[in-house]
Image (cartoon, rainbow, N blue to C red; front, side, top):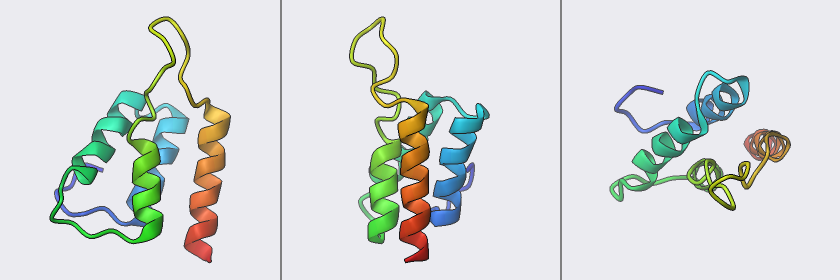
Length: 88
């Protein structure tokens, strides 16, 4: 996830897994996704764009002293949905 080349679905999936495993913070996942979303010169398939949109904002909290807006269980569900979309 350090490269300069546009990530594919494998790398996007690895970002979800790294965040859930604690190898990447939610803030890092958010910033990684934003890097790619902000590059308007890139074209994305529907599954990649959907997944990047979820990763960007993964660190949002409803308030300053509250937990994340989306808990780990919801993120796991998104990961499973990404895997279904890839298979379909």
